[in-house]
Amino acid sequence: MTLTDKEVLHVARLAQLELSEEDLPRMQGEINEILNHVERLQKVSSLGVVPTLHVHGEINAFRDDIIRDSIPLEKIEMNAPDFRACCFRVPRII
Image (tube, rainbow, N blue to C red; front, top):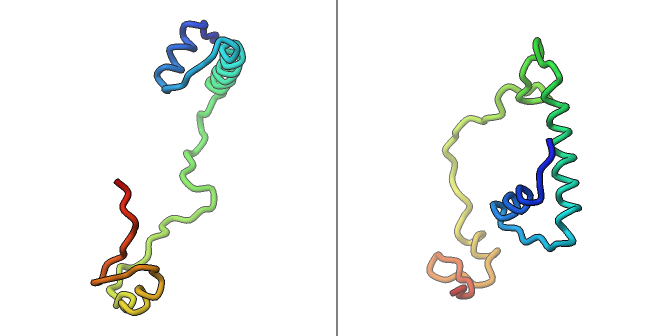
């Protein structure tokens, strides 16, 4: 599959990328190379291949939901440069 200049510019616009005239041939070549690779992958038969979710064999990584006491407020306060009235104070952003 080969994309035209117009199609590359359309994809760039969808991705909100600005391409200069100098970048266009390079990007066209790279995109076409990727599409050719995907086209080759689509020709490979995957019949009989078991879908792989995890390569490490773990089935369930969840832990039991155990209710515990939270960190004491004094320890939390020690980690904050400005902590007043049970709140972290941060510089105003807006």
